[in-house]
Image (cartoon, rainbow over all chains, first blue to last red; front, side, top):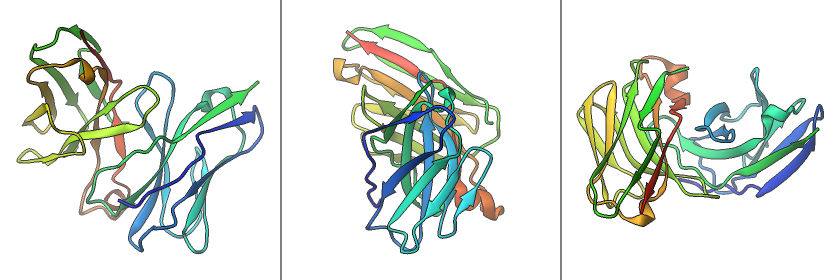
Length: 110
Length: 120
């Protein structure tokens, strides 16, 4: 699987937007970009995924660069419950398991 | 969300003992996975199963074995536990359906609550 690079940690103030970056310069044409997050003492949970176009759902937005070599997960208004480790994962359509890196630990300050 | 349960939730055992961790799901998903997580690290894949008759090794399968007893059940065994197998173990399922384009492309994974295993 192609590799991703994320900052080890980020901080945000509560109620403010958060932009979590992910670099994936070796992404292939069939790789989808998936984001999962892991809240403290829980298993990971799905956040969002996309291929080329920007995507929105009730949890977050995913902005994908035109060359697809980077992407940004956007939390529009961070809450304390958004404090978690966020994983950016590249994955070929549906035929391979997820491969997790170390992710970005997001701290939200009240 | 998928109802993925893991038993036990916590287990302390001794070196050399055989241990089985069990995973059950009620969502009817074909695909199931076992991961381990060590402190400060991401998840690493141990084994995965795309259906009842399909078992595949993951990144770190040495020292582990699995059994897919039914669509709903996927067990992980440590034949002879050693201290460096102390970790948090997660089971997951996914809703891959080749007849549903959205699930085929997303193949969203749903994780259980984890089993904390300590090998002394």
